[in-house]
Amino acid sequence: MYFEQFYLTCLAHASYMIGSEGEAAVVDPQRDVDIYLKAAEEKNLVIRHIFETHLHADFVSGHKELAARTGAKIYIGAQANAEFSHVPLTDGSEVKMGAVRIRALETPGHTPESVCLVITDEDQRSEAKSAQPSAVLTGDTLFIGDVGRPDLSRTHTPRELAGLLYDSLHQKLMTLPDGVMVYPAHGAGSLCGRAMRAERSSTIGQERLTNYALQIATREEFIGRLTTNLPARPEYFLEDAEINRSGAATLTELPPLPALSPAEVQALLRENANLLDLRAGEEFAAGHVPESISIALSGQFASWAGGILGIHSKPVLIGDSEAQIEEARLRLARVGIEDLRGYLAGGLAAWRKARLPLVKTAQISVQELSQKLREGSLRSVDVLDVRREGEWQAGHIPQVQCRALDTFAQGLPASDRERVVAVHCKSGYRSMIACSLLERAGYHNVINVAGGFDAWHAAGLPEVVEQFARA
Image (cartoon, rainbow, N blue to C red):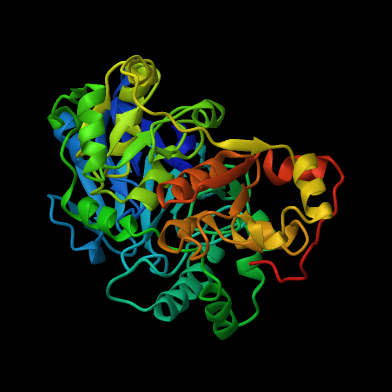
């Protein structure tokens, strides 16, 4: 059996290819599908089957394009009400592919249509007994160290889904042998869960012992824990799920991206267009187009763009090169942001050459921040920590409040826009996004804390750890 995990770091998304005797199956494909076609060609495999473990909410899947390019069948849970040609999966549905059997388990909870796929390689059986399952692809039902969030349905309440998830875990997945490998659809950083570990695979036995959600004693307690303090759900999640229900257009159908002159970009800015600056935070701080939003192409660029701008935002891209623009366009398409106004031709160099105004964002070190707090020239209420609540609880600057970036754009501080506001996150990526949002909202004295809380901690400066229960 051939088995490969494809991990897309920017979305913390794992997809898979399984092969046997010249045939292959792809599970939970990303939007751009050439990687699977290339891998299949290299392994002399023909892609015959495409499985979706559920209607993904955090990215647009490439299942429809991959099927069109290969002639493969698409399989998805019967409860998905999928609008494309597909084979509905119910409990016990099986697909035989060479020596490999793929068996579906209906595991509602993260979503009503969620399924997990049990993989058995019959080449591994002994003469004395039949082959045992070797792996289970758990989608967003079971993660490494976590389980799927239960609030991504239009038809079920979070409590209803959490109850179904408890049943799916204990009546289906936890009945598998301890040695079965666990391969989820997401890893640490994904908003489909909240306490995922960094590993990209595990075993049923390891999760039984270490996964907090599987230690919860009763169904009712599980429901309460899973529906309390959920991270904010980005608005685009439900929209992406609907795109996946019908199947997305192929990437080749996207029209050419217009190259815009500085004058054209300035005119769009007067119309309140969204200007999305892709450059690194340091470059943005050194000079940027007024009111532009900084989301650096490094890190989880597309997820933040989807959550902050929304998939109908029609941004103008500002980058250092056309290659950077093209990469950004692909990554935005992966979350459903397809309709772009264009990009600033020539980047900041062209803007400067046109003698148009630039804005700088001030930065200070953690040592300078500490000194300003001690001497009173900056109050703790003027410092915003834009990490998520769990990060804040694990350690934060004394008296500084948590203002998570996930909901920052919807609730910018309603205060004097002339006051000094310092912003920090873990290392500086998210804080620069927040600084740009504050500047766009009319704040004139915004300071980014370089290095973030990582630098504060490394410098041995005072911090507070909250007493809280995990997850």
